[in-house]
Amino acid sequence: MTPAPTLQGLLTALGEARDEVSARPAPGASDASSRATEWSVDGRTFATLDQAGTTVDLRLDPAVARAATRTPDTTPSKRGPEWVRFAPVLLDDPAIDRLEAWFAFAARHAAE
Image (tube, rainbow, N blue to C red):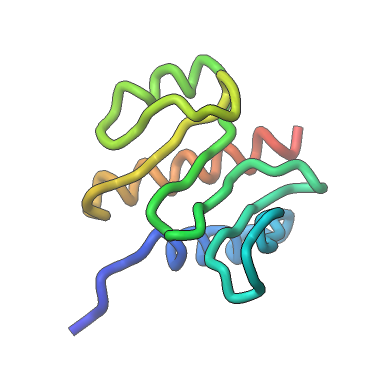
């Protein structure tokens, strides 16, 4: 039986699939084993996973972010108008599809 996907696992795989993306512990993480992680391109952070591993903030474009907040489990982030907070209750195929699309968009946008 295959274990259920996690945000951490999916984001790690998405980051590793892109040469320009780097991951590191998020500033303020309580210790080296903390799950709080951020992904960036050329030092420009575009995704941050919280320490609990249940919520990811993604930096999109403001118009894309507004549209994204109309999808399930997604709200505006406190980080600003270009950020969304995604906290899926269930990582089903539609949630994974959104995460993959937003991560790719955010990485491309950070590289601009």
